[in-house]
Length: 254
Image 1 (tube, rainbow, N blue to C red):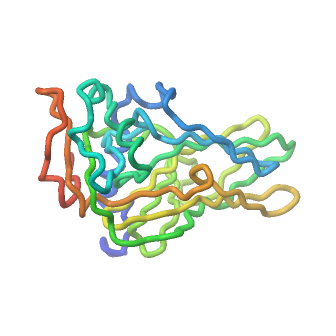
Image 2: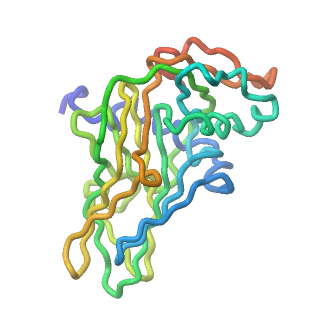
């Protein structure tokens, strides 16, 4: 397979991006007070979902929401909000559009005596268009993946979830039972699109195949690449948010 034919996650750029997503180990699921938690109950399969909203879930590359329009500006972020990624909380008050990457953590459970087989995690695109114009803040470093992960490249012609960290990474299938819970982080990414989507979880029980959908509290998840937006970053020497035009055309790190 040629390099161009490989999916983004298999190319060097995706490997680097995956490294971004996993740094800052001290943040890895140790602080959850600002997370939105929801459960999607499809009778035999219960999905407990934690949305990355406040402190970063697992990314080394930490980005704010993409803020569009002129009502809010980076200068509106207070000095206190620049500490401990507080600017992420403020930007998410203004926008629910993730910048470049989007992460949720999903806990799969069942109360059935027989195992439930998860056959496919399917990202269902509701809208895909050119990236939006706005502004964002980015900060962070590099690291390695910590949990089993479902990568989704929304720049691919036909995006699908590619599983990593499972015993057999070549298969999409895994299972849960009454005594065995599975936790998977869903990492979606785009550099050149605006995307709205939900996740359809296809699974099988003794009663047959079923589907449960994960969404954002009744709305689609939303994300945009940053190529059409203005970049800012955190200046540790001054403790302030500063303009960073080097990333206007796309974030480059590591």
